[in-house]
Image 1: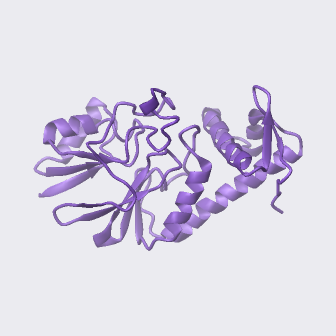
Image 2: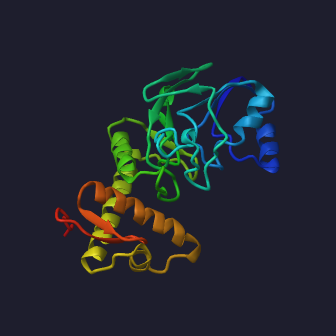
Length: 261
């Protein structure tokens, strides 16, 4: 029993809150840290703060990394966002949070959301990765707040670190971080190549690309796959490798497109 920090207390669900309260019985909560503002991560922070009086920490409200798209401009960027949460203390990349026996470094990793923050426990060279790196699946990047270019840059940022273990919000511990992140990057480059190949063959609509690339996909996951393809297309457009016209958009290879072998 002691003074502890809670990372991503979870959803605002009565059963979940009861389990959270039981798990923290006898502990003194000194910090409430939020990796990002999706509804399965941040909403329980309100109840936890009421119980404990501990301050909340995070990069900012939903969309804070892209204020032109975020709730600070009165725009709800996606259904799954917790648009209520605002941290008591806003943290930035490199900030250090000190507690009773622990030191946490803030590592800003936009991509999954623009306000995504990982927390590195220096004493153990462990990184709490939220949804930036998950132990059981690849990460969904959903525009407009999610950004594929930011996501790839954030993965490369982790490759430059010397963390020994990742503790994701979903899935088990990742004990080979560099190999795991390298595989994530390779997967995204493979997906990009598949999209460019589909465009070369004249498939310019996202549903047609999804049908070709995600063969046998569970129908419930088709919307998420479409968002992933869109995120790749938007990044390719930034690079001048893809162009688009019309509504709904029809995508074509740009003059500078380079297909992978």
